[in-house]
Image (cartoon, rainbow, N blue to C red; front, side, top):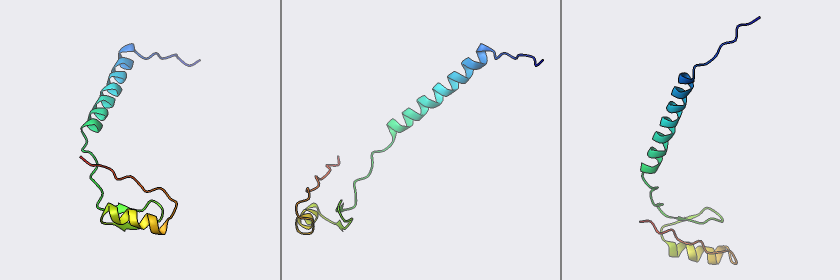
Length: 77
């Protein structure tokens, strides 16, 4: 018959503390991460063509994709 082995509660507590520390460090790193950079231009969500200004994108959507919604610009701080 195989001998039953038990794990010390201290080992389990140490593993739990290590996991909690790693999670806290990961959450802190995500919170401190830099916000995403603003896009270089404006891309049509319907066909993927890029434009340098929002007004050009609006004119394109109105002429090439009539009846589709005009995408709202994102205000980057």
